[in-house]
Image (tube, rainbow, N blue to C red; front, side, top):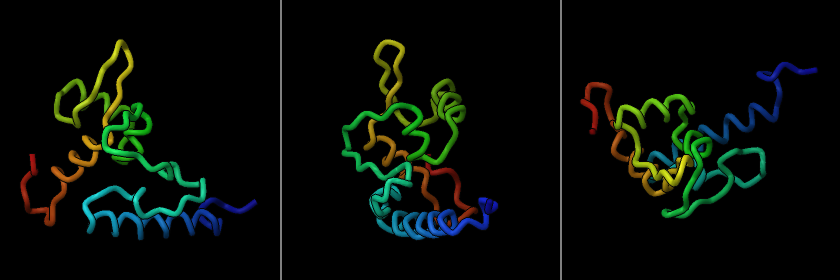
Amino acid sequence: MRHPKNDPATALRAGLMRIASAAAARAGTDASEFLPHYGFFKLSKRYRGNDLLRTPDAALVLNVSLKTLQNWRVAGNGPPFVKIGSAVSYRYGDLLAFIRLNTSTSTSEGSAK
């Protein structure tokens, strides 16, 4: 059995993700716009601006952990969320706006917020 780091499919996914992330950064969107829809990418589903994403999907879009999103909700410094009953969701467009607000071109820049 191959080690995951030596697996060609893993290397391909990692390379495609790097390319998609770079293209997304230039276009001001997320990587799912540029990823091929082969089914092995978790972000292969295309979302529209008002689509509601559950917390695990939102965490994938933002590339953060579930715990980070929970902490941001408590602190009030994360993306806007929708709470219906006990279910927490995020509008896809709000996640993209949050990414744009937190995009910097230099480490010496202050936080965009």
